[in-house]
Image 1 (cartoon, rainbow, N blue to C red):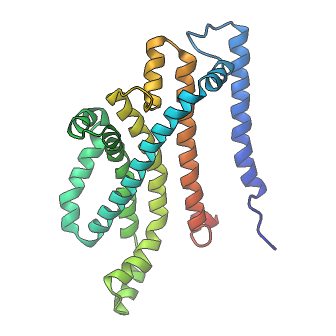
Image 2 (image 1 turned 180 degrees about the horizontal axis):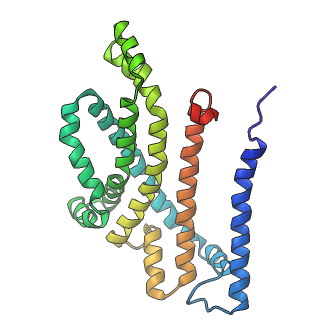
Image 3 (image 1 turned 90 degrees about the vertical axis):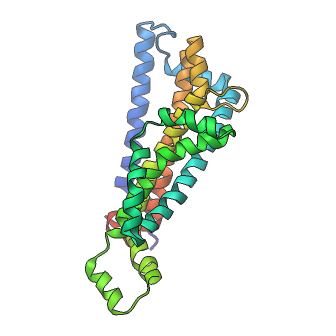
Length: 264
C-alpha cells in the first residue's frame, strides 16, 4: 500500500497557519475600514493587493532581480562554505588559521562592508552577490563542519580497523552524518542570502529597469507611497518563506528514509 503524501497531522500543520493568516488579514481590513485609517499612515490589505496588481510589471521585475542576486549568493555560499568545511575537517591548523576570519566577516555588519565591495568590484550585480554571500556563508560553514566532525567514535574506529582510506571515511561516514547539519545550515543561509541581497541593494542604491525590491522600497519611502512599500515587503517576505520551505522540502526528501529527525 502506497504511503500517503501528507498525513492528517501534517495537513493540519499546513492548513492552520493559512487560516490564521487569512483571519489576521480580514481583521486588519475590517478594523482599518471601520476607523478610516488614512492610506499614508498604513495601508489596508486591499490597498496592497491593488498595488500588486497595478504595478505588477515593476514589482515582479524587481523581484526577479533580487531573487537572481539571492540565488547566486546562496549557491556561492554553499560552494565556498562546504569546501572550507572539508578543509577544516582535514586539518586543525587550517581551521585555526581561517575560522577567525570567518567569524570576523560574520560579526561585521554588511552595511559596513558593502560600500567597499561595491567600490572594489565594478560589476554591480557581482558586488551585490558577494555582499549577500558574505552574510550567508557562515551558517553553511559552521553547520557542515559540525556535522563532519560529529561522527560516532565507535564507527570511526571501525573504519580505521578495516583500513578505510580518508576518502572512504569522508564519503561513507562523515558526509551522511553531516547531511542533517548541512540542511539545517541551508535553511538559515537561504534567508540570510535574501537579507544580504536586500541590504546590499539598499547600500548600492541602484535604480532603473534592473533595480531590485530594495529600490522599490526606497522609492516608495521618498514618495510616501506606503502601499507600494508594503507590496515590496510582502514579496520579500513571501520569497524568504518560499526559500525556507524549499530547503525544508529538500531536507525531508534526502533524510526521510533513514534519519531519526525525518522519521519522527
